[in-house]
Amino acid sequence: MSEVDHEALELATTWFIAARAMSVAAGHLCPSREATAGLYGRAILGLDEETCLAAKTPEQVGSRSLIDCLASVAAMGEATAAKIMTGVMLIAYADASMHPLEVRWASSLASAAGLTEASFQACCVNARVIATMMVDPHEAN
Amino acid sequence: MASSSGNFEFLTKYDNRVARLAHQAERYVHTDPDACLFKLRLMVEVMARALVELQLPHLVSTDLSSMLRGLQRSGLLQRKEADGMHAIRRDGNAAVHGEAATTPAAMRRLRDAYRLSAWYCRMIRRGAKVDLPGFNPPQPPPGTDAQAQVRQRAEMLEAAIEARRNRARDALLLFSDKEDVDAESARLHGELEALERVAVVAGEPVIDADLVALVMAMDVEQILEQPAWGRTADEAKAEAEAQFNLVKMAFEEAEAGYRQERSRVVESQHEADRAARHVQGEDPS
Image 1 (tube, rainbow over the protein chains, first blue to last red):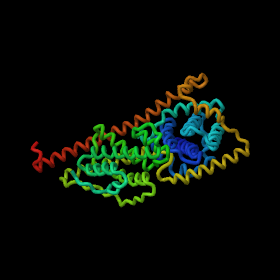
Image 2: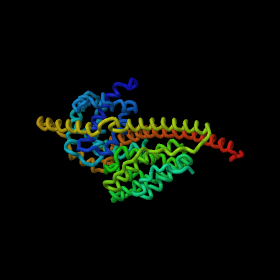
Image 3: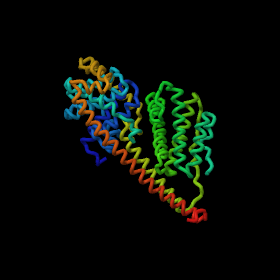
Image 4: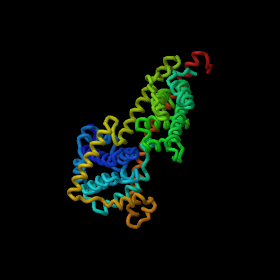
């Protein structure tokens, strides 16, 4: 754990909470959504294996609320917050529909990140493009 | 050929073909681990096909990977079973393509197949009561000390590879195996509902759901041709592709390393087997 960079751990924890919230918003956990989150974190957010594992410990994700997650997104730089937003939209696209709570979570994140309408549009579009590249972790590993 | 340990006797009354493949895999595990993995891979394919025909007859794709993905998406195949089936698919494919396989690797997959078999019986016959005793590992034929040492080395190597693979997999998953996924999901869902109530009362804005639906419905080609989005989307696509490729390359490098380590152990195994045959006078070379 001591090898994990604090800033990276904060990003990973925020990412996994944001991704989990979107994954369960429709009331059930969709397996294709579960598969998307880790690869996005590794590839696009640049999180290493150690950091991803450390973020999923009870001391990290288990002790944070969604409000904590939104506060963390609000404190991030614009580029990083946009990457989180893009990843969350990528998860929303995984089952090709949006439940009202998914819309709410995306809206809350967009507000916390201070995204303009144009920035949010870019996140949506980029997520749609990236969605075509996602592979099952079983295929990758 | 070593005799079967009878772990899969129960399967015969549920699915004869699957049972036959399991028996064969069990018999080969010590004498020919490649053949064992090949049989297990075929066994998983037969199981997946039966489940698809039963539950997802509309699924067009019939390669094993697509069938497993379809079963996962439909919720029939949960994480634990999916992990076992994918591990057998991966190691079976490697054996088919001539990569060195060790007995401990084949034994691990045989154990996975044992666990999966009980689940499979419950899936194809509703209400089936399949209460299995513990897996009884087939015993190796008697051998020399050198052969036993190589077996031990192979066992340690496979344990290390399995541990590294599990770490890589755990890092990718949304929830860790140690978490209570249902409880954590319920906690987050409850928080989302509270957030929604507060946001509605406070008149918080929502995202443009029409835009999201439009983007969701568009083909990637349409997006890339769209004047307002095309350039940035194209750049994002290229950047993401490069980043995904880096991660995939890291996985491939790790797998190549495992293959090399296995090849060395398998070569030692062959040397020990040759020496044993020489001592017994079966191999004059």
